[in-house]
Length: 545
Image (cartoon, rainbow, N blue to C red):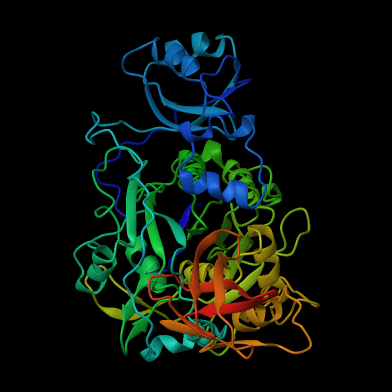
């Protein structure tokens, strides 16, 4: 059964019409021949942020990244004006269509370039109700949040379990990072007073809705509201999220009131959108097992091998494209199914089980291993009595691996902010290695409970060689606003500042043996300052809070 991985939800079937016969299909294509897109011009299908990430981590842009050839889409649509394209996948080279007249299926199957069709859903679609959507422009935005001591209130329990509060104290709260959240809806998120600063600070970068028959991600379901609040809240004395200064993009990939295979296709499309936007982290509190409303789409636990489900394939690819992929393990621990679902079985992602604040595994938390014997879940976090905000603006506790996932997703964004030299794959491995059962994992906790602060300490590598007699000092370091460099040589100095990717951020010069630089407008992170006094040069690592 497809699950919003959240306990206590009662779903209505109002507005949907079901039958066992399919009218939605996944069309597999064999090639991208004669594509109008080229790997030489990635700006046509990837954002500048995404291209910069590929360059930074030497991730090649390949044919896999090219969008589905529009000529194939046009040939399919030419059969009938009622045929609608619901989703495409450039990674899997598929087109998902609504085709109400089955008489057209043989013709589509026989088109050149079409391999085969897979039925994925049946419902009666309303006429298109949404205006054509486009991905919101991603700007080089800076949060206006200032550093301050945080009062976590009751939420300290779910963050301190991973010593994430100490990571926050170092100044790493997700600033500059982009988290893509996949869910079923964000009821009232845009009107709840607690979240207004996120819009005022420019931290909500946009929304997108893949689900037909719905008009806005801010209606239809409240699951995403609760999930996002665990990461994004900044409610002093009550609820501090795990990444309160991160940026967010909301993508509805989940049909709120049904369980059909097509939802995995929407998940794939969401992952590709997150990649094209340049997202750093995906949080998906969604999982798929069987589909009561479309049983021909069912798989078994033996299929949870990381490669059979299309959502699992896409999750693995997203990790390879430079995204930290965090997926809730599922709430099947006390059901006949028992095991994790898809895409928690994906290769090299962080699937997250649930425990309470006392580190007792939740009885509902899905267990591993994957069908091919890999450790699953990867790690475990607080998903039992987790503090969150409801659609009514109430702060309360709830349970489900839906809630353990965002604890980890937010802290992963903060850790990557602190360790920008790591790739996404390296970052996920660092999290596993910092977990308490890394050397002796089990089927319930996986590698265990990660210590994000220890991961930070163990991987904050120093890449400089200091002379035996250091003649330059910098104070304060870590720095919040202004830093001053001092020289014992009594000569003028120059300072050039670099970020951890090697980008030159500017140079300053002083005729005196001291030089003060304001870092107020720089985001939190690690910087390198190259200081030159005459023929003497030193490189100093700075931490900006």
